[in-house]
Length: 341
Image (spheres, rainbow, N blue to C red):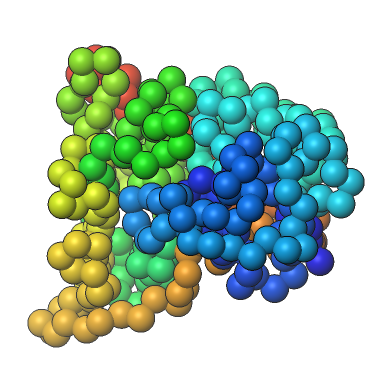
């Protein structure tokens, strides 16, 4: 049994807590929050841009800490699930690794490449696993793209175009999402989902060329990127930003073109995954994965249990994704493609 300590009881902390209940071999042993109401199991005010509120939780049998140091010092914790604001990831992850814990950190891995590198170096130095919860790799409709690519039934993938937009988030504790110094802005906090997934499918691009808009605070808040893969005969793009209105707080989707089929999904307009084939037929596709968070955490628990780092959530891959989105923001500001070679 892998004993889990969750640091942070916000939207992601609550989401992970609930998902662990469905993961065989996992036991949430402890959690940390400074909020007395949350420590008592009242999570009714926790919300995000999809799903419902946190509700009331029975925390009997769960050790509850109001100080992070106490959680990090708990000898009965095997895996720290780090769901605190992004600007805290580096220091807390390194402290946890040095305390002998394996670490799963919510995306993004960090806000700078230097911080990500320091975290990866600490994992190597301590011999602990450092994993990053880039959940889109496990999202049922998105994972189906990888399944069709690997299966080859519909031929080679020729083009893939992704979309992700949200309304400006106002639901985080202390409204920390409104502070780019804590989130990295829309590029690092939101757009990294699709950039990471694109790298999961195709590997790291040779270059990125992005256009977008920059807010008054100097943050790129909306962008469209072309990912360049010379010699691969593929066309890949993604658009993301915090530009939607409250009526559509969250929307993501894609159009993916194979030689003999097209896969289409949009969480707002085409929520059912659709496959169009060369004979003119359309069929609904039942994804292999049913719950992205459960599958992601199952992967992490399996890694800790086996002592083997799962490639799908490996920190070095998440670090590459961070470097790529930062290059995209640079491309928006300079108007030029940015090489990743």
